[in-house]
Every structure is written in structure tokens, then in C-alpha cells.
Length: 146
Image 1 (cartoon, helix red, strand yellow):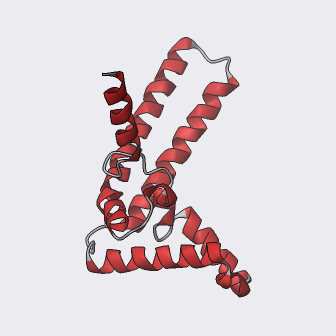
Image 2 (cartoon, rainbow, N blue to C red):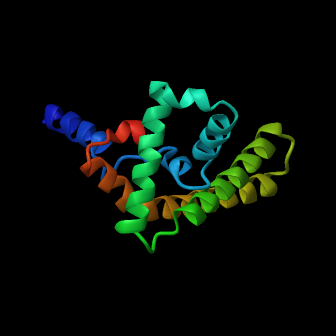
């Protein structure tokens, strides 16, 4: 019985349909990872031949192709922007909470506000799940996408 539970937990953690997509949104057009990548390549084009940059380039190209062909209605750039803003706001709240010295009612309000931001962010992430799963179907390791 314990073995079945442990096996089920492993499955949930590695099943692309339920696993956390981590920072997958940063690979989208306008996402932080892609923006940084494009900036570095523009300044140092010789780096494009390095394995890490080649892999990233192939992934970005595949994402772009899928967005054009299979997911034309998915506004991945806007979703990535939304997630970034929501996470930024949640991070600011975390900082305020960590500074301490706040009245109890303010702490409760901030905790509730942060929970709402996380829920909104999760909903935005889920909009990207079909693209994530399609990339996994095409052979990408889900852990490398996150």
C-alpha cells in the first residue's frame, strides 16, 4: 500500500499534465529568458554555436512554429507578460511581509492578496499547458522546459 502511494506521488511529479511548469513562460516571445537570450546573441553572435545557445534557439524556433501553426489563438506573449506582472506583484508583497512590523490586519490583507495573485498566475500558466504538452509530445524533456 505504501509503495503504491509513493509510486503515485512520483507519477504526479513527473506527469507533464500535472507537473509544475516552473519558468516555462520565460521561453515565450517576450519572456525574460528569451529576451535575455536575444540580447546576448545580438551583442555576441559567436555564442550561437555553443550547445546551450543552440538548444535554446531550437526550442524558441519550435515554440514559434507551434504558436503559428497549432496554437494561433494563444497569445503567449501576453500570457508571459501577465505572469511576469503577477509574480512581480506577489514578490513585492512577500518583501513587505518579510520586513515585518505590520499590524495584524495588514498582514492578513497582504496574505490574501498574495494568494489571489498566485491563483491568477496559476490560471495564466494553465493557458500554456497545451503548448507545454505538445512540446513534450514532440520529444522535449518536460524538466528542461521548466
